[in-house]
Image (cartoon, rainbow, N blue to C red; front, side, top):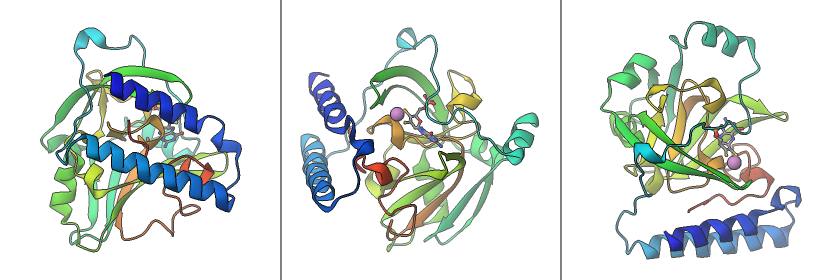
Length: 246
Ligand SMILES: Nc1nc2c(c(=O)[nH]1)N[C@H]1C(S)=C(S)[C@@H](COP(=O)(O)O)O[C@H]1N2
Ligand SMILES: [Mo]
């Protein structure tokens, strides 16, 4: 735990204020260098085995799991979906897969489920512990059969934050990690709107901004160049690290 707290603190200190710094060349190199180091260290600490994020007990649950960033999606389509309890929501599976398609909420609920109580750490300086339930992303990707040339999974979101579509991405290590799930429940109930209803990513070894809410699709890709500004996520395009390991 001490090591983890150190990494969280170090990451938060490093990131503080970064969102205002432009993507100058030197800054890009600094960030890239730091994240390569961090990623290597993070994985080396695991000794090459799969490292699991700590899991907690019911007694540790935060009384209220706040919402952050977008707390709803401001479109008529989302409001209509919400009014129907998200019964017709679909998760599109696309890109470099043998079996592209769509999953309904019933499809998602019919897959084997994983429930995990984990701590969410936001770089803005708050944490919360919640119990999340949903299928492992690996199950969905196994069914889709990811092609060998895919290097990343891109997560598409319904919300637009300050004029840009929110999105995220991860590498295949994290995509197939056992604690990476497509959550549809928080604390045993349908995901609240503020927390990303009806589907949000939980990617437990990474910082809060990686946990994409309001998921509409997942896409297997070879490169991140064609999404947003090319840095792999909404906040990454604004200077945050792509590999936000904790
Ligand atoms: N689609 C989308 N996902 C998002 C965000 C967002 O604004 N839009 N904010 C991120 C940030 S910075 C954090 S800390 C968490 C907050 O999750 P919560 O609202 O469940 O607390 O969602 C992340 N995922
Ligand atoms: Mo965050």
